[in-house]
Length: 283
Image (tube, rainbow, N blue to C red; front, side, top):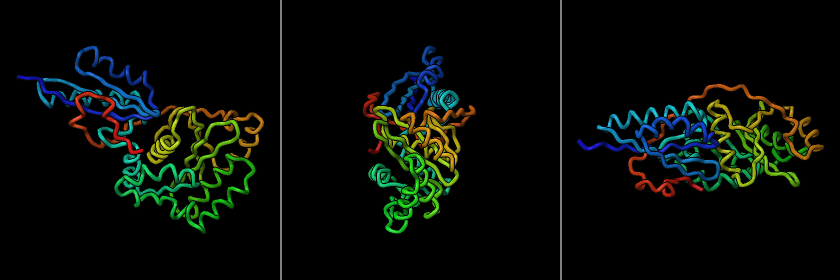
């Protein structure tokens, strides 16, 4: 009886590569699976192929592999199959009955193209029409930001005001200071998650992933900090002296076990093992 082959594609963002490889090491060494991987803009696609005496047996092996990766990488594993990060985010927001909005024009522009291609996005995202791009609400957001002396506090004010005037659950903003990389923020009236980008990182992907994890209550990626509402002004004032808005935020996260995101779909025909053809990310 010929062996049956099954293929599964795992999608991860801001993963711990060594932890993921170690999780699959036993299966690879025992010859139970073959692994192909591709990395792009902090996202990793992992194609796992298993061969067994039956389709059911091959699927069991893939299930074990996925469970191991989920345990090792936690919230970094965001989906399975052909669903990209934007589609996964919209599905989560629909399931959670949550709304999100851009709190500034730059974030609105970043999300414009990738989200416009996602089905049902209009049920959870306003494309700025009720927030920063609205004449009345946009003015309120700008006025709130201008009251703050420092960029971090101004960005938080945008988020707080955008959520208040639109009744959205989440809002996103960003800012840059002279000589410093961009900082992206996702939050609400309680506070925000903030991350200062490293060279080459795409802000729209980080904003999307931070929002995904926040909506699910999952642990954020390394380097993403929580700033409680009202604490930004003091942090900004000290940051001005150090030229980096997050040097003074000595924030230690409690490590928690996180379950993986639900399986969105399995790719049954994955281009004959050519990893460069597996990317299905809407840019």
